[in-house]
Length: 338
Image (cartoon, rainbow, N blue to C red; front, side, top):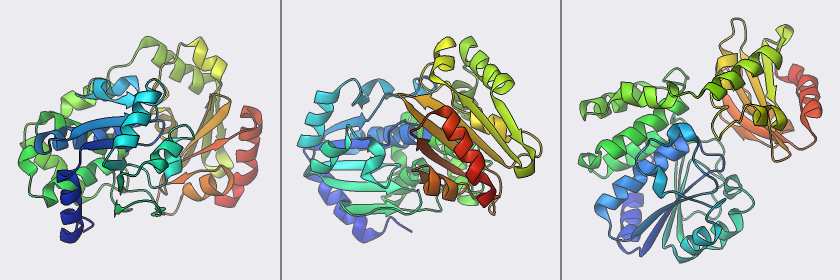
């Protein structure tokens, strides 16, 4: 139990006395970072009279724009001066779905660190760096930060606050970070939380359709092109590699979030237990690692060679020397992890 009575008392005291509360999440937001941020946002607005703002490093992906409150999120990319001001004036800053200040990106990081606000980490990633955080709620066994937001609300005996906006955001975060409940991090407790959300009137089919069944033609063509033209199967390592250059993404008019799920599609190939997706963005090769099985981790490869890390079966990294070199590097080091 990470939400202990003594920590909750400290948090409650800080929130009651806060003039301004800011909710932050990691760069390149996903369903869990957006879902947990909006769930906490809608929850806090019901109970505290301070100014409450969600400030993210960059904009939400299009497939999550239907969630209530996405229009209220300030992104550093487009609202830099306003975000700087919010961070500077904040009394409490929530740091959701990341456990190191570096995860918010080089642009926003110095302003986050410089803030004198109480900084509260709520996260589920491995190896948290706790220096600089005033309160830490970290559970590496949790499937998602959205699940932790539910548990925070439950620990405070405020589950009546889970209205449609809160519940849909929590469900979205859990669903996306568990691969629709199929990853090993999904537990009986996860399903009990989902059952409670359903009992409270949350529509699972609405959420699934909004997230997964709302593709543009260009997005489908982009995925089709990547699989038909840029997929390589390394049979001896039970690994599939797929990539997209910046030019290829531009050709299909790719929008933010359009490559979401591609790595999991590749992982579904029969006989494959590792999938690696490389995407060129702003001169950086961003890499997504996925795997199947507790004894088949990918976070070590991401951390050792690609300046990344994450969960055993779902990690990220990056490479700075171009796409061909990134692919060659993966092929070179892959035998160490098979």
